[in-house]
Amino acid sequence: MVHAVSTDKAPQAIGPYSQAIVANGFIFVSGQIAIDPASGEIVEGGVAEQTACVLANLQAILEKAGASLSRVVKTTVYLRSMQDFAEMNRVYADCFGAARPARATVEVSRLPKDVSVEIEAIAVAGS
Image (cartoon, rainbow, N blue to C red):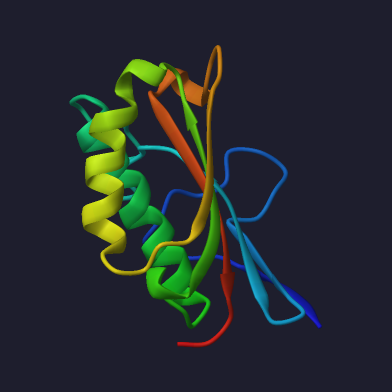
């Protein structure tokens, strides 16, 4: 069974995609950027503030799907600049705690709305 996940506690999709899809026991969360779901605006600040917002958005989507960050098995982090890696990594490590999903981090030339970071995730369904 495949079904879409949608919550107003994370930014709505800005294109023809779902916030997440649950399929075959996994949750595939679309890339999240630093948009405040209440205002629809980009979060002010640097990569640390943006990373914290992105991870909060991921958490909200996972909670709607019945999971949490502790169930994440793989993330992909897209950074506008690898010079931001250490700062992003600090916030990421604090957020995930002892849970250490597999991860790839890549530098890209541009991200939606010119943000500094985007993160997508795959999690195991369930809490």
